[in-house]
Length: 255
Ligand code: PGA
Image 1 (cartoon, helix red, strand yellow):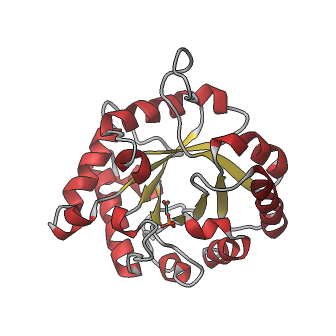
Image 2: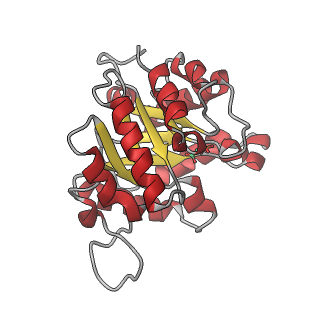
Image 3: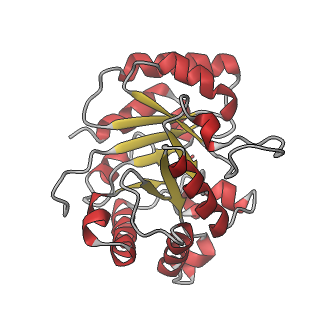
């Protein structure tokens, strides 16, 4: 570890567009029972927007935080179907921005991530900024250029790296495919992200920034990522819908 202050690992569970209300309640209760009082790892649950209020109620007073999977950058107005950052205050502590499905299914641009980042910070919430390259970009040797472009775009106009911000490095080819990056590759890419942040801002804030790996993380491979010096946690999709698997992943990060 290069930073003076150790980085507390952070693990996110991104449920995506899954769970009925009854399933969400059951999973939230199960997670609360499993995790309450767990020390040494920060755990953030990202349920669908429809259950954010329920999650805040059912996890209230526990050590589990709630995050939104998406946000719109305008604070209010005629934007049917959207949810603004000020609306999340009091319910979510953090917001995922730029997830690969937002970028590649819904066409979000780097400029959009920049607007969302500003809105989330203005509302006093923690951004979790997701970046990552497509398979063809990785195969074409363009990973570093893509990560640099995504980070530069997201931070356009920023003078400093927001202290609470978390970066999630998620290679698109590893998401939901079962083809997880090796621990060595995850380490190399997370270190690459840190180097880009140090170049764009400064070494101290880059060393303090937590960087997660995401993409087909499961109970079997989590310990490999936990052993990597530049991987400060994971962002979990599919395996976060199973309480036992998600617990095993989170416990792998407890030193
Ligand atoms: P996965 O999803 O764990 O199902 O691959 C990861 C993510 O999308 O964050």
